[in-house]
Amino acid sequence: MKNILGLVLTAALTLCATLALANEVKTPHFSITLPSDWTQPNEIISQQGSSVVLFQNTTDGTAVTVTVVDAPMSAKDVAEQTIKGMKSGGIAATAPKEENGFYVSSFEQDGAKGISYFGSNGKTFAVTSIVGPDLNTGKALLKNLKVTDAKLIPAF
Image (cartoon, rainbow, N blue to C red; front, side):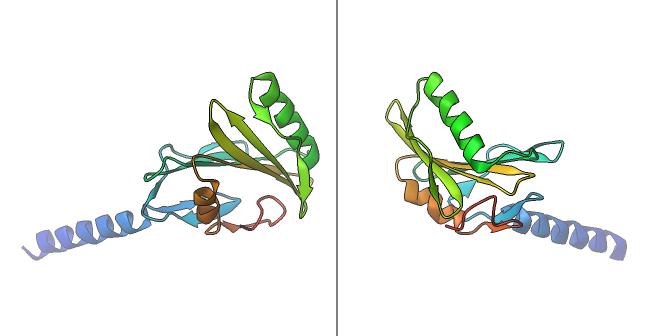
């Protein structure tokens, strides 16, 4: 009986620990604890040191993506190439502008508005994008990011 009670208690503690950590997301480049109104609808996509993470707000549908790629491109080059691709795909996007060491561009398609931030440390680049009815919802989430390299993702 003691062994069964011990197993049940261990299983319950493990389940509680798993549930408590379920809202914490960690990558080699950042970590974040998601507030209760945010989800991570898909697993982190990781390949060869690069990762893509998607977060979605359950209240208003705002989406945030953080893409980090191990490639030696400048933030400006990544921004210009990304905006060129967006425009050729029918997305209206502003020319990227430098702000505090990052390049920033706003975009819109079919009434959906967004903004992207492009950063680089010379070896790795990152694109952080927010799409939704209120971009401030996404910026509020990103204030919780703990980044490993401040050149990749701006402080919100």
